[in-house]
Length: 348
Image 1 (cartoon, rainbow, N blue to C red):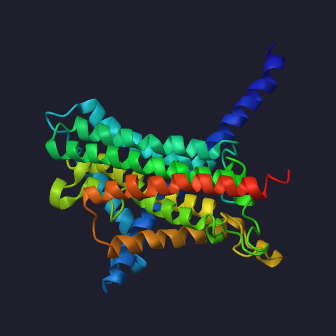
Image 2 (cartoon, one colour; image 1 turned 90 degrees about the vertical axis):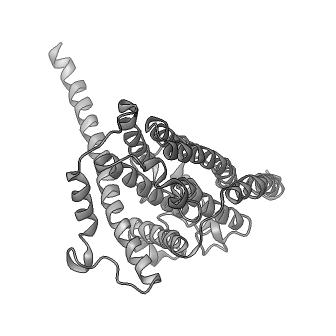
Image 3 (cartoon, one colour; image 1 turned 30 degrees about the vertical axis):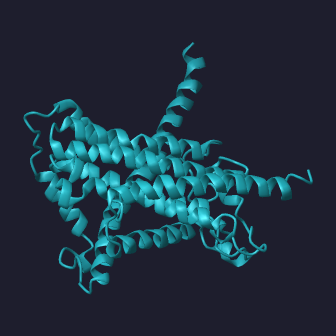
């Protein structure tokens, strides 16, 4: 009996260790990327304002984010007396965890993905929609006026733009013919004149790439859509009562979501890990390099917009989501499906 169980236990243990290692190979680089994303964004903001930015801690200020993290770690976690203690502490954990689990299906190369599931895009949509719970719980559990107002705003904002994002993803799925993230990347290989590998260069999908980019900014509450943290109205929004590591978890989750949206833009509309030109010599460059380069371009746009565009009013935010993006993305689903019926499937 023992001999019969040994291979099973050995395989099970190996699978468990491999899964844990795979998770760490994603989670640790993501957290490191968050630290340097904050540094890079501060440097970009400084450049836009003709300032130097972080330049004291470490060479060129490279250790500034780690110094800030250490400072936050050493602070005391203060829970308001009237707050619901359990939910108050659970809320940032939910936000941070949800921000990490979506990375499981992001492909960084031909064989560099933790879970290459057939419904990868649906998994990301489901995981990202869970993020609103951390925000709502933070606003309600704080038992304070401004965090609660912010939580209500965040719930309405996230739901509003998730609808548009969903229809944009339907257009991409129709074109690619699959929900699998690797399949979506491979469907872009040389899809423009057999030379260019990017959906955003496709005239039929270019408008949806713009809608997705703007909706991603609204979904992650980035400027000019940061109405959930409008300091002139809500102090610091749902984070007002948080301090120490609980506050840091929200920051980590926020920037992990921003980098995730950069990765999704790269995968869905920029060819992911494929080189921009379908030329054999370019495939000598590892796919992960192309992926990071495309993510960096999208991140630059995020930082550029935050540094230059003023904040929307809340009615403008809702009008853009419900009266412009929703009808446009829904119409584009019919347009893409009609085009495919006439061209790709009609002959079949």
